[in-house]
Every structure is written in structure tokens, then in C-alpha cells.
Length: 357
Image (cartoon, rainbow, N blue to C red):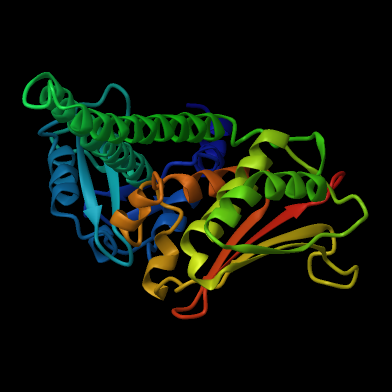
């Protein structure tokens, strides 16, 4: 390597997104690139690596390459504090020159790769598959059980046949809703990185959804209190996705807040002198029993339910708020949930106005 390349090497290593550390024969840090200093702020050149990284497998791998037992050694290390993180590392022994074959390596280079996010995503995938399988298995088992009953003991019982067929139809609808929500969530996640650019009059859309859901509200004896500006409220959006957001939030207000017999649906524009003057604010408030505070941070997780049995009885799949969250994220908006036991719940959606980048 010529002098120019040697001089540029630190800058090249600093440009890497993965942590790179060099230690001498005593395992003292001689170089640490920017990514490693970000990962471990306490890392200091001129001090033993073990002062910062106390992973036995890592230290053993460094000892092996420094003693020239192996040319390179791979492994993983887990950190518990301040948060749990998983790293894959490779330790490689460095010799004085390309042709030298010393009994010991005078230095070693360590390259790390943060696997924390990959492990988290894999855990989410496994949990998602397990939850989806569980949600489908229950109604499917019910259907199979009723079919066997209709083919056997209830073969000649018209009353039982009629009752069982009604239940089977409801279970079939439940599976269909779940599959529809799974497909919707998958589609939104696949396009979440692409922000919609079409102009949508959010006020008109909200009125359309409320008019569609009014019969459902009347059946449950819930009244709407609607506050929407007469002027157009144009946002950057996908019409069908925004309709899904409004449907999910208003339906939730009807289902879970029906004891309050009223649901507020409100759309406002922020004042020019506010912190976010280029946003509109969509709000749905119910006057039901409310949600305990410990559940609020997890409400947008897939399949998370405060009361699983009540959710299933009202036709919920446990995916509605997850879909809302991802759609709002795709529109570069914000979703905020507020609730207090005995005082109902309020769902806030903030969306940028049309033309705002």
C-alpha cells in the first residue's frame, strides 16, 4: 500500500457504517472508526479494549488471532446494557508485511455488524405468523366441528342445522375479515416508503365515511357530533387508504364507546401561528369506558387487544390500529392516542396539507 493509500485509510474506515476497531498485541485500542465510537461512546484510543467491551467470546477470538492460532475468528456478542444489542464480529490478525510469517501477530482488526434490528424483525415475523395462525385456527376449528355435527347428530334436526349454519357463516366472515386485514397491512407496509402525492379533500372523505357508518351507529344507539370545515381541506394522500383510516377509527368509536352513546368526529386546520401550521387535525373521540394507560403504548401492535374476547365479539381482528399506524406513517403524518379510564378515548391523526413536502 503506497503512502497516499495509507494516509486515506482512516478516512475510508470512518466512512463505513459498520464499527471497525484495531488493537495492538496487548489488546489496546489503536484505532476506532466513527461507527464504533457511535456504538460505544466510552471507547477510547490508548486504553485496553476490555475496559469497554467485556465480551468473553470477543476477547478469546482476539487472543487466538494475536497468538496466530488462526488467521481470523468469527463470533457473536450480546450486550445487555443500556439496551440489549446483538453484534456479529470478525477478528483478523495483522502481520508486519504481506510476506512475513511471525509467530505472533502484532495487531488485530475487529469488524462488527449490528444484528439487533434483524433479530427484532425476525422475532416480529415469527410472532406475526404465530398470531395469524392462531387467529385463523380458532374459527376454522369451529367450522370443522359444526360440519361434523351437521353430518352426524344434527343430520335430521332442522332447528340445529339453521343455528349451526348461522354460526358457521359468522365464523367464515371472521376469517374473511382477518384475511382482508392481513392483505391490507401487507400492501401498506410494501408501499410505506412511497409517499402519496394525490390531492384528496379530507373533509369530503370523512363525511362520506360517516354517512356510510351512520346506520351502524343508529343500530347501536350512538349519535355522531361532527365538526368539519365547509372549505376544502386538501391533503397529500391515497384516497382508499385514508378512507380506511377514517373507517377504522370511527368504527372503533362506535363499537368500544357505545356506552357513551356519542362519538365526536372533528377536522380542523392548525392556525398559521401554531407549531405545525401546514397540517390538518382529524380527531375521533368516544365517551366509553376508556383504556388503561399501560395498554396505550401497545395499541398499534399487530393482534394486540386490551380485551380479546370483547374485540372478537364486536368483529375485531386486532389489526385495525396497526393498519392505521402504517397508513399514517406512509402519509408522513402522526397518530396520537389518548385515553383515561371512565372518560373515553381520543384518536388524533395529523396529516400534512397538499403541496407540503
